[in-house]
Length: 446
Image 1 (cartoon, rainbow, N blue to C red):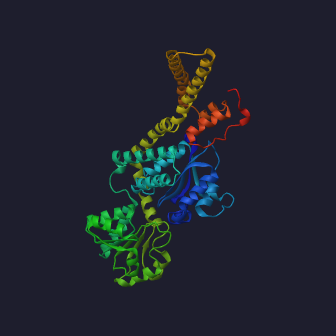
Image 2: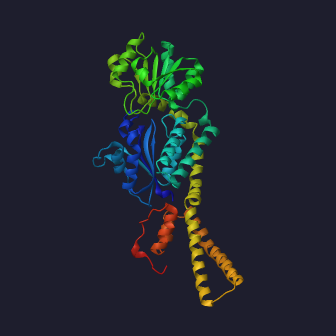
């Protein structure tokens, strides 16, 4: 059940936020590479979670397998073969209930540099939506992601952790406010994302003028109109940037959108170069170019360090939030049994019904011609008997899967003939095959 779920990935703790760009899948290749990885590794479900703090793969295996996927995941994410032991040192892995717990903590913002970070729930939801769109999400991951979203909402609405400004965008805004206090002026928000939307809200409340910049001008216009701000296309901004006090960038571009030529224009258009705040991984504002033109830059590593400085104090307020996560773990096991294995229980009852029907047909042939009323009574009796016979193993197996050890389903299926076992496993895995059981152990008369 839960043992089929797993997570492998890397976070800011291992390499820092800005170095996560080395583990980020290019957008144009992401879906193709994820599908290929799922095929090679025998995964029935796979989702890719990418935020400013982490890059992780959430998956369900085709069978209960303890195989370590970190080497394959390292090659997928970096494009390079790992040196001996490198994948195990750099990537973290979770399995079963531990993977569910980790996903819940991530979605709730309890595993973020800024404890209680609000943007992360939307990023986790986006990962779920992308997995569904690419056909890589099935009942196990859907259930895990849905429960993670439910917990995140409960924490935001029902604990002290959801109060106040809990966002990396707000951490970045402290740098914006400090710069504006020294040198008032306008702010450019590059990219339309959760980060820039929260920054726009803060700027609008403070009455600070700003311009929204985006590659697709329609999105820039929509966000700008909500706050009465100006807007520019990215091409317009790059050709002729206005005089600015601050440039805050948070796009999904694989390369810097504020490159050296743009930085040179920014440095000379006003009295002094603006402050660059780069909230993107990989970087949106070229670090070397900033140094050459004397433009100050705040990157994700610095923002995360500032967020972590308040982490201990925030964790004291997270006790209630953590309790909600702990309460959800046994609940999801029950939900897995009911939703994921519901088709299995249906297939098991169908097996009993088919057996009873076959027996009645044989009995009818032996008895010869039967009138319609008698045949109908026999059919009703057979259907009732099949339901009663299926009840005890269904209830007993449901209890084993909820409260018994992992592998209970394998143990139950081990004694069945190969064809019946394959039919029952297809009810769970949607046409997949299960290869954990030895064919040599089959009893053809089972």
